[in-house]
Length: 418
Ligand SMILES: *[C@@H]1O[C@H](CO)[C@@H](O)[C@H](O)[C@H]1NC(C)=O
Ligand SMILES: *[C@@H]1O[C@H](CO)[C@@H](O)[C@H](O)[C@H]1NC(C)=O
Image 1 (cartoon, protein in one colour):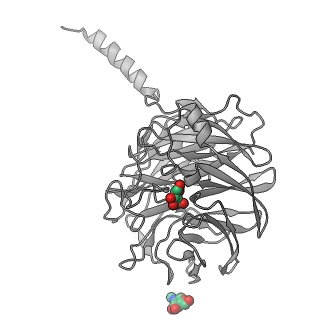
Image 2 (spheres, rainbow, N blue to C red):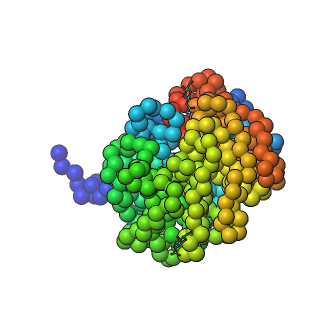
């Protein structure tokens, strides 16, 4: 068969027209409703992932005016989940914090697909924040086992941490039409010597964050005591194009620390509170003033996740081993102390958390993975956190035909109407 030049040209230009439009070809965005009627008075939403090996889905629950939650829907990411390799399988399959992250400013939500080595991006409908629309197809994470994400404060840049056999960070521009586009010179490898999926929790990557002025990108890596104590790796971020320095600087934990896990910024300082399941937590002072210190939490099992409330000025640390929330204060000189402890339901497997300000009041949302629940704690004042409700999402998920497993669910992030 022979085509005329004109015919070939018209076919080619038709193809080019098609490919110039960002197409969405995965099943990302396929939605299963978990409620009959989405609440129109929603103040915002919380989100976490199922991380199921067959299909990863985002569970979105509306935040009511009183801080309580309504399960609303499950939205396919268009990728697959994967659980890390462990002797006894349990919750926290990613060994990480930040597997799903939202930017309130950017009105976008991103989730990792560790079984597909991709990242999915969605725009959040600010009127109905459980309504998620895919922005392009999932993109390559440029490594294996993506496990943690961070947005810059403007919500127009995203970086990922891969923690598998190909362990690396990579950053993207967040484009409201094209989705995620990789930023040149941001693919930087970590010498983790891991497998895919990684074997852990020791010797695995944990969390990725920007520092206070976004001049550095930081990841936490757990050690394998007694052989090693883990570290923070930091790359300089170029102010204009967002590219990363060719090499990273490693910062050792303060004496006693060994397994740096979550990194929650200390407001107004170049410093982080890092949970450390070896003993409790540590404060990392990155300002060069040598005020870092590790702090033991008496009776702790595995303190791994943390979030901060501007209203109470406290940090809230989740311990999966004892199902306890520990409230911590860090003063202006970076001296830290335990304020109070709040035991949750025994065996509920408390993991990722997030703090949301709803109508001027702060609430702590804790994924109690082993109980397929989200605990809601009202943070009335420092030293005064009180559980006001628990949402068990297993029933609504089953009714909606959404497969999930308490060992796989992970992450906690939010959007709130401004
Ligand atoms: C930092 O402080 C520790 C004690 O808290 C001290 O042992 C160490 O020498 C100090 N390092 C520097 C560089 O000042
Ligand atoms: C999860 O629940 C099972 C029993 O239902 C229990 O054996 C296990 O220890 C729990 N895991 C955690 C981390 O609490």
